[in-house]
Length: 233
Image 1 (cartoon, helix red, strand yellow):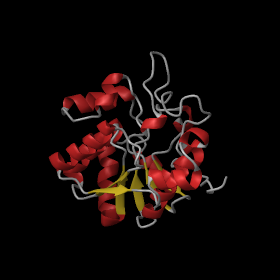
Image 2: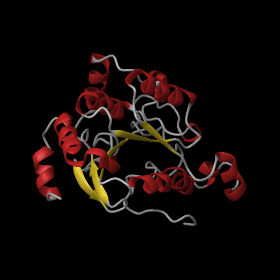
Image 3: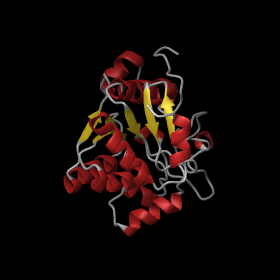
């Protein structure tokens, strides 16, 4: 494996397509794109149509997504013939309610995200040498210093963020330029879209992720946080 510091220097100012091309050439079938079909992910999905159309696409199906999100995933699958793998938690929403109590997301959102997102994704990512994420530095203060390339100790593989240096305006300019289908909720002031019970529209002047876990001291689901939560933490 090349030195991560050197790779960051090489790709820090590169176009996302350059990093995607390098990743596809280097890791081939051992590479996966992880996306919740939000704007940054849609841009990379479109770029990969020319670079690596058969790359594995992992998306977390928590069982709690908006109907609009499910429709968007299906639309992209059909339109672009994508190889989408839905990553699901061990328990259905109903089973989780039986074991943990109803509406766990309202009482302990960290545990809910861990059970329905972080653990399931970790179980799948262990089979890949590198994964691509759509996180950007302008999305939240917790992501302000996100490297373009990093070693992910949680999943024991290389984490690639080709869109890290892009802005929200750049992403939407690309989406509109190529007339890409996107989540209809974005037109209703949902800037960041997760599970339906934990997502709301934002108002003018709010941070893009203010609509996630509103009222909770939480702005990350846990996937991009180094420490993996234990089930009973």
